[in-house]
Amino acid sequence: MARPLPSQGREEMIGPKGVIKKTEFVRTITKALYSLGYERTGAVLEEESGISLYSSMVDLFRKQVLDGNWDESLITLHKIGLDDENILKSVSFLILEQKFFEILEKNRIMEALETLRSEITPLSINKKRVHEFSSCIVSPSQRILLGFANVGTETLKPRMKLLEELQKMLPPSIMVPERRLEHLVEQALGVQREACYFHNSHESCLSLYTDHQCGKDQLPSHTTQVLQEHHDEVWFLQFSNEGKYLASSSNDKSAIIWEVCEDGELTLKHKLIGHKKSVLMVAWSPDDGQLLTCGMEEAVRRWDVHSGECLYVYEKTGLGLISCGWLLHGKQLFSGVTDKTICFWDLDGKELDSWKGQRTSKTSDVAVTKDGRQIISMCQETVILLVDRETKIQTLIEEEQTITSFSLSGDDNFLLVNLINQEIHLWNIRNDPKLVGTYKGHKRSRFLIRSCFGGLEQAFIASGSEDSQVYIWHRSTGDLLEALPGHSGTVNCVSWNPSNPHMLASASDDHTIRIWGLSKVNRKRKETYGNGACNGSSK
Image (cartoon, rainbow, N blue to C red):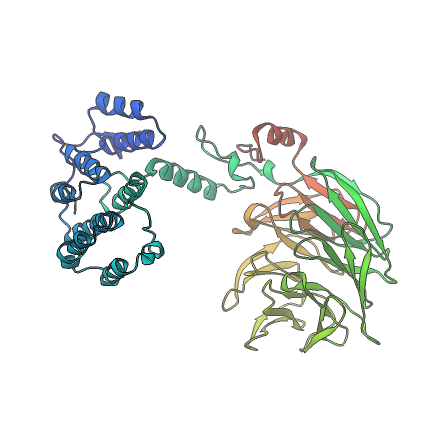
């Protein structure tokens, strides 16, 4: 334990609630000033306040360490108010370690050996390290391995580093921790951010001048663009991993790659023609350089994103493919098949494996975690099967209602499950599956509706709906935040841009794709104040 700095009478408290000790507050500010390089200002604050950053004994100790007066620094160490014997020994060990290596670097071998025998070893701590010191006497190359090569040629930096290490070990009442004020401010901003119900903006929006509070206007709730290149129902869409592209697929037997421009507008990059049937879904490669498209009970095609060229067609004779996805950093792919199997291919179309589970062909959804280890698929109308490909361990997610679709979170830890009874369930699948959230309000009676994670840190849930609206919920609370009108037909699928929390896309039976963003006022505010305007008012 450390003795407190001398004070007269009761310690003065400051702040609106009177819970901040004035001495600690001033010393913390002084430390921050010195750390920022404002030496004169720090000295003036010490003089004006009458509150020293360090006691005279600690100041002497610091000077002795930086000057390399090792014996004197050890004497002073015992006078600065440390009562904890373990801390005393640990601090002494670090000081003597520096002394040992500086002597050794000057080839004063006998003196270094004497320091090791008579000063370091008697401390009886860190015996493994002591043995390493011994090997340094015999083998100079060992000093490099321990990070103490050439300490004799430039002593100030190693001594400054030593002082930083000592500061971490000494009680804060003796030496204020480095960057303490910055840590306190970051902590306060973090608490405000976590308490912000609608938080959907990057860190640059946080300010020290006001308490942080996002409004509902930080959600992408205004139509910024309507894309009308498809000529039939749009069934599926997905932003690329980096958010630079959007791919959509339609009942018109085509898929389209859209490019997201710097101003937030989307332009048509390629229209992908080749499927003989409706295109069920698309899947981006991990590097966003290639795209898979899956025809309805037909074939999977692999496309080059930059040229729009079809690179390969994957088929199974007499069978149809109903889903697709990527594995192993884009070196392999998988597909659900109409015979209730999941087929694994290399890029050249060689079939590597075929997993014969009890899948049902009523849903095309199959997911594989990024490490390729876990397969997630339907095995019954109300049951999702999770299979570890290595251990063959099977885990079940059992629902009471028929499952219509599911989607995996970006971190592979959560599964969003759409049910026939107009509910969406959130499952934590990290260990034993656990239901952790329920979302209600959207409409679903006949069609396949898809939902997604989205927003900053995937803090929100979005879904399509048969009432032509897009629904947005708060992920943690399950509260319905928005029902966005605009489409004139069922909204089949939604996708939130992973790089831009203010961009959401929706695909509809009305043949259009809507891009949702901030209102014009908030877009201008965002451009003016950086990436993420905050302190908006709640509606």
